[in-house]
Structure formats: C-alpha cells, structure tokens
Image 1 (cartoon, helix red, strand yellow):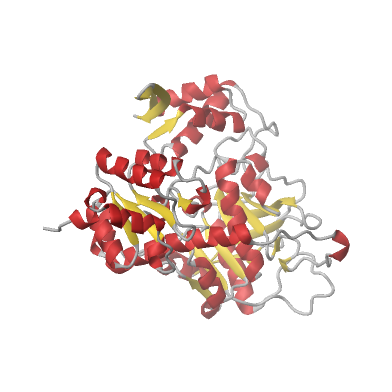
Image 2 (image 1 turned 45 degrees about the vertical axis):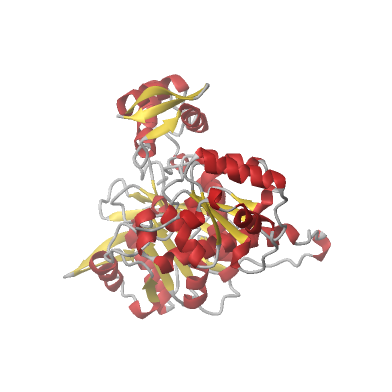
Length: 483
C-alpha cells in the first residue's frame, strides 16, 4: 500500500512554502499539481516539485498558502491531470499567468498514452513531464525574444524552388484531392517513382533547370499498408524503393501515430532530408481533438507543418477527400474547412475521364506561385502481377473541365433546401465520428462557415444527435448528444 501522506498538502506547511517560495534552479522549479497519488509520488521521485490535491480542504490549503507568500519568479505551476476547478482556482491567484501551464493533460494523454500507461511506464512518464517543462521554457524564451522589424528594401528576393513546375513547389503546401478510388495514391506513387529515379516530370520545365530533381520521398499513409499496397504500386511504377521511406509502424501495438504538430517530425526530417513528404489522408494527421471543419483549428496545424517544409526545404503534398455534393463547385468540395484550400499555394484535383474509364485527369484548380499548369492524363497500367500508373498522351482532353471529370452538375457554390440538408448530414456524420457531444454554439459556427442555414442544419442533426441542456451550477449550456 503506497503511503501518500508525505505528499498531501495539509501535512506540512513548510513543504508547501518551500515548493512555491524557494528559488529553484533544477527540476524542483516545476511544480506539478496532481489528483493522482501515484503520479505525485513518481514525479517527486523523478526530481520535480509536486502537490497532491484530492479534496476541497487540500485545495483551500494551497490557495491560502499562495495568498500568504509570493511564488518565486523561477518557479512555474503545471496541471498535467487534475480537476478543472483546481486549475481555475489556483490560476486565479497567480498574477503572472505566463508561469502557469494550462491544459497540460492534452499534450501527454494522447493515443494509447492513458493514465494506466504512465503508471506502468515510469520512463515515458518522465519524458512526458520533461516535455511539459520544455514547453514552459520555450514559451518563456519566446516572450524574451527581441521584436524584429525588417524594411522591404533590405529583404532579398528569392525565386521559387520547384519540385514539379508549375504544380508542386518546395516549402509550400500542395493539396491533392479526389473522389475515393480515383487514383490519388497511385499518383503519389508515380510521383515518388519519378523522383527516386531522377526522371523528367511532364509539363513546362524552366530553361534554367539543368536536370530533373532526384531524392527521397517520405510517405505518411494511414489508409494503405506499406507492405500490401504502397510497395507493390511503387514497384509497378518502376520506383527505386531504396529512395522511398516511411516512419509508420501500424502493425506495432506500441506505435504512436504521427500528427502535423508531432515533436518527432523535425528530428525525422533532419535525419532523412526528404525532397517530398506526403500525408495521406489529411484527417488522419490533424489529431483527435481537431475539427477539420473549423478554420481556427485547422489553420495553425497547416501553418506548423508548412513551417517545417520551409525549414527543411521539401515539397509537402497533403491528400484530401471530396464530399458528395455534386452541385457544388469542384474547388469547394474538399472535405473540411474552406481554409484548407486557402492555406495551400497549389491545389490539384484528380478526376475520372467522363468517357474513358481507365483514364484519370489531373487538373490544377489553384496556383498562387506561377501560371496554371495544363491538364494531364494518366491511366492505370496492369503488367501481369504488377500495377503501375503511367502518363497517357493519347486521350483527348479538349473541352474537359474538373466539373465534368468529377460528376458535378452545377458551378453554383451555394446550395439550398434538400441539397443543404444532404451537405449538412455529411458534415455532421464526420463531426460525430470521434465525438459523443458537441456544443450547439460550435455547430452553429460550422453551419455558418459552410453557408448552410441553421434550420436545415438542425434537420440534419436530428438524424445523428439529440438536443440536451446541461446545467453547471447556476449556468447552463446547450449540447447535441450523439444518438
């Protein structure tokens, strides 16, 4: 039986005083507040300062102590796991909010890393606490950095570094989207194959290029197994598979999936030095708590991964799916927030030729960096046991549009009535895929962003969720609960 008395706050006023007031230079300056006794003991044994709060009496004791003594400027408080009222009550009496790390649990309890996981894995628990401490130090360092102002007269003009002109540029986001089964993964395998062999890419090539680019492609693919799907397709495309890598181990039960903000990525890119990085599909790499229909949640993630693409100078291709709304403009059919398209400098759509079933057509539907590229035709090439993806220079692409190759029936972006409700149901189904309850205010924002009337959105909600008002003391908030 573990004895937690030495960690309970009411046991020693002098220890609380020492924890908060004493000037610490080592790990003790990070004060972790827990509602789990075993966590508290483990963290203390690892060299951190800890406070264990399990009831209101202990919470009041900590608050009274903090009111009587000032907290040392070297120390900070971190809440890795404790009740919301504990966080808010203690934070309220700390004048300098920069010395409080809020919502720390979101950074350590991810994927398979639950409370039980950390209780059984002390080394991982130590690494998690260090990462939280580093996060605090990084934010403090950011606050002390000088502000830089540059005159545009001093800024050196740099040319765009192209991987495939004018379709894919290095250091920028390229979105590739298509309907399921069209051949998005085949196209990425074909591109990786060309890059692995240093083969020329089709399209307009600037005269100053001495030779086609050649280098490593890194795949992040949550849908297609590397051994059963990706490698056979790469071989079918004639790839030099020595130059194509993946860091994912989906069959390993201890594997922690990557995300756009994963701290492992910089080390990975530094080691591999890729020319091209592919994430397929986007929704598998935004994280479990992110709603891809909310611009304020998706834009920071895309900005972060884009900053890594600039830092390590690789081309970044993010694969997206399209919705089923055939009466929308094709550029508006990327699943998720419209801001996803806004963050990209180039957007590529892969469609199905309306008359030739074996032919796929690549269109560029956005380009902020150069003139738009011409449509290109591809076809899936069966070679006995291997299946490849090759250019088709025979297919007639005259008069073809992305809308014709997507089955779209209209160019109107805004839809009404039954069409709005169908669109709403598709969005709602995606929202409730990983969530059991969503605040009504959040759903209203989503309907507004997609230009769907709240009335039609509510009709769509009725199929998936029911409205409920939840009371918190004297306050109340409206939710939709998954059926």
